[in-house]
Structures are given as structure tokens and as C-alpha cells.
Amino acid sequence: MKIAVAGTGYVGLVTGVCLAEHGHSVCCVDIDEQKIELMRQGISPIYEEGLSELMVKNKERLTFTTDHTAAYRDAEVIFIGVGTPEKKDGSANLTYVYEAARQIAHTAKRDCVVVVKSTVPIGTNDKIEKLIHREQKAKIRIAVASNPEFLAQGTAVRDTLHASRIVIGVEEAFAKKVMLKVYENFDAPKLVTDRKSAEMVKYASNDFLALKISYINEIANLCELVGANIEDVTAGMGFDARIGDKFLKAGIGYGGSCFPKDTKALHWLANSYDYEMKTVKAAIEVNENQKLKMVRKARKYYEDFAGVRIAVLGLTFKPGTDDLREAPSLVNLPILLEEGAVIQAWDPIGEAGYRKLYPSEIHYCKTIEEALLRAELCLIFTEWREIQEIRPEVFVKQMKRPIIIDGRNCYPPKNFRGSGAIYESMGRETVGSED
Image (cartoon, rainbow, N blue to C red; front, top):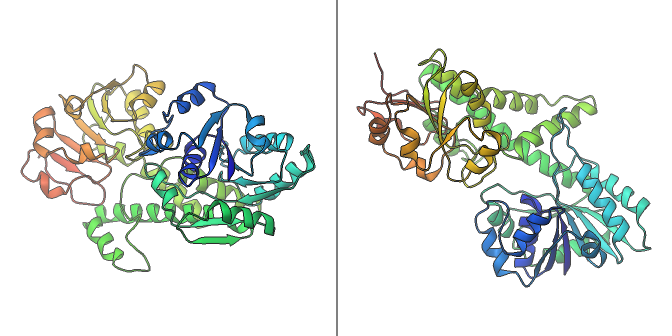
């Protein structure tokens, strides 16, 4: 099929490339000419495992352009995969979605289905359909379908090619037929429902996972107070098939482009109907509080951080991505810098993004050992494989005062017994003492 995709961020680009992998002819549209030129060379503008390789492999079926008129004119299906950033009040900013819909209405010349892939509040697809029908220039049939994405950054390609499910929201037979044809070669369960239900599936899924994370972080906090081990607790919970073992890893909170934005958006939407979702509200509050756990733990060793040399391992919100959005490091590092800490940071991917925020305030290191050198405190924010492979003796050898606060439970506490280091993690025993 001839498909166009509006937007080349995580959702748009991954969707376009994976549709090309399944044999469709895909044209990806973006307003950034430099970005488009990179993609024409087979270079992905985002860090996502396997994406650049698929771009090169499918270059005969993939085109990239800033000319939306040419892209939308003859497309059978047009995916909208632009960003829906969070507004100050927590609601979703739909400016880019509506602009893409307006461009489609003005330029489409054949019957087509407009597919909203971006995460949008319930009822948005209906509004988009009205906008398109009101402004469309050609006398053609344009249907609107909801097709939410369920991608995790770092595994987005795999999550698309080997999807856990494909949800399609339609209001007419024409759109249903076209959408099933788009996905006929995808081996995944397919749910066809109405548009509002499809929109709600996305929010309900993401917010439930956020609830699990916030819940287990609260249990971890209580484990520390009562002397229980969170990993044994979650192992015991995970044997229950009704609970499962996914998203039960204690840490310093969720981040990224989805969970923070989607929980706030659903909470805002409920409030707009004069209804409060208490569980979602609690998940948001717990997560914001959890991000400050690192600084609170560090204050046991330093009343203030003036002149303290601190090694920071990991800057991104999770491994496998260069995304810094809502990363816990962005909450903690400003506090440390404001109090005069000397920060030595290492991240294999996230440095470039961090340099845009802190070009000179942080010393960026090429190796973990360099970041640890003469440090008086080490804070671990991201569980990169390279960090997980560091042995206790490396911390002791490199650091002036080997105090490690691990926000991602990268190591078994027993590894640090007798090492000469103090090791604190989330919901588990503290090993070592300076007493």
C-alpha cells in the first residue's frame, strides 16, 4: 500500500520504517530539512536499536520529504505520528496533530484513511474527523481511525514488528477494511473497536504500568524502614499469575516521553469531567517524590554538597535510549549543582543531550573509571550494562570516599560486603559503614 507518515520522532519514524519492512511503500514527512537529509542517508535522528539498519535495508520502499503536499496527495493511508507534548496544566498539546490533519484535508486527492498514531485524549479522533471533513478541498472519502502505539523506548522496533497487540478504532467498514489490509502481514492479536475505546486502551495501559511502578516503589520504601528485601518481595509477588513479574523493579521512578505525560493527561481529562482518578493522582505524586530519593539518601553523608566531588553514572531515564525527558537525573543534578557540587558524569548515549542543558557546569567523562576518579560520592541513575559490570573493587580503587547510592539496584548488596565501600540501594539492606 502507499502510505504517508506525518512526523519522524519515535512513533512516526519507527512506524514508517516497520511498515516498509512489511512491504508497504512509505513516505515520511517532517518540517526539519536537516533531519530529512540525515534520514535520506540512512541515518536515524534518534537512538533506537536496529532502526538505522532497517532504514538502509528498506531504502527502496522508504522516502523522506518536507513536502507534505506531495506526500499526502496520493496516499491510501496517512499516519499522524507527531508529538503531543504536555502543557503546563498537564493536558496534551494537540497543536501538531491538528496542523497535520489540516494539511491532509487541504492536499489529499484520493480516498484514504487518516490514522491517528499519536497519543491523544479520548474524543480527539472525532474532532479530527470533523476538522478534516470541514476543511477538505477535494470531493473524496476520508475516514479517520485510531491506532495507538505501544512502544517502549529502546525496544521500539521490536515492539512494532512483534507487537503484543494491534488496536484499531474505527467507525465505518471502509476504515476497518483498509486498516486490516495495512496490518495483514503482522503476526499479532488484532482488536477492532470504536475510536474512543481505542484511545482509552492506550491511556489505560500506560497508566496501569505507571501504577505498578509507583506501587512497588512505595513497597520498597517501606521495606527499607522495616528491614525487608524488596527483591525477595517482588519475586514472591511475581509467582502469582494475576500479578505477574513485569514492572515490579524498584527504583527512583519512571521517566521518558510516555508515562509522565500520559498519567497527567488522563488525570487532567478526568478532572475536566469533574471526576478525580485517585489512583492515577497517587501514582503521579509517588513518582515525583521518588525521584528525589537519591538526594535524600545522599544527605545522610553530606549536609550540603559544596565542593563535594560526585560521580554520576547514567543520565537518561532508562538504558537503550538517549531520551532525557523526565529523567530522574534532571531532578537531582540541578540541586547538586546549585549547592556547589563538582559533578563528573558518564553516559554512553545521553551526554550530547545533557550538554545542551549544561554545556560547562558538568565534567563529562569518557569512561566510568574517569567519572569515579577521586569522587566522594557515586549516584547511579541508569542501569546501563556497562555500569552493571563494574566490580566493587573499582569503586574502592577509584573513589576518594567510596559511597555508592544505586537508584536502579544494579548489584546484589552482598557483593559489597567487606569491600570497604558503603553501598545503598532501593528497598534493600545498606552494606558497609564508616562508624
